[in-house]
Length: 184
Image 1 (cartoon, helix red, strand yellow):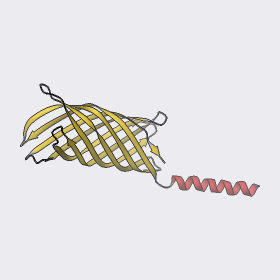
Image 2: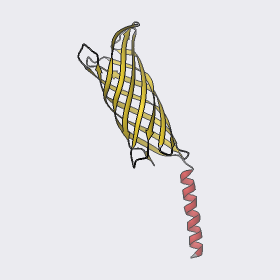
Image 3: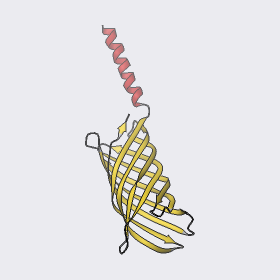
Image 4: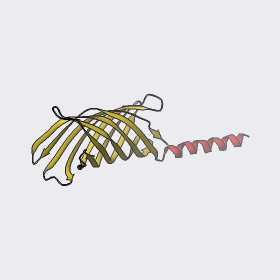
């Protein structure tokens, strides 16, 4: 019986050690709302429109986690944003972005950053703008199963379809979100 407990203890210790020594699967879906944002549309260097952005957003971070509380992988973010310009009607934009993220967790706080290499917005007239951007954020992870996040994003769209010569759209967004991080 003593031998059984020794072998079981060794197997348990080996199992705990080997599972913590390898990378795990990291999945974090989120829902958010852009509480503050600004967007400026320029053509050939001249500003033709400047307004505020608000709206709902959703996304998913998926990749690998390391035992020292780091995670990295791909992030997808999408949603519908309302572009409000004073003196004209509000316009809705469909938004999506794909990028690479990295995050670090410290007790009840996590910090993360994402570089979006493929970002697009499409307006109501079916003009699609494409570009890139980045996001930095922090999250509180002290609640069971969920995290509350605040992030800041900057995007630059420099191509349009159908083609608009010299188009440049700069956007910034501050988003509050709730996520469910799974570190398997």
